[in-house]
Image (cartoon, rainbow, N blue to C red):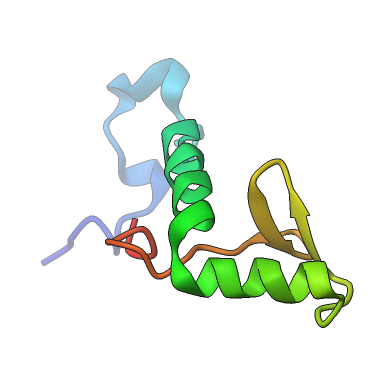
Length: 88
């Protein structure tokens, strides 16, 4: 018995028409609301406060930096262990 995975494009119904050969791409990414939550948590979460203190004291070097309310490690955003932010 043939299923959708074993069929070839030629076996498809000819009513597909203009959509034939097209692909659907879905992108997802963090929302700006999430960044606002990360900024708030960076200001109060113990792990983020410790990292900010180490950065200010010069104990952390590049690629760590604090920009626009976010702790960054290179191009990555540090997400504090606050509520369920890391899960989000």
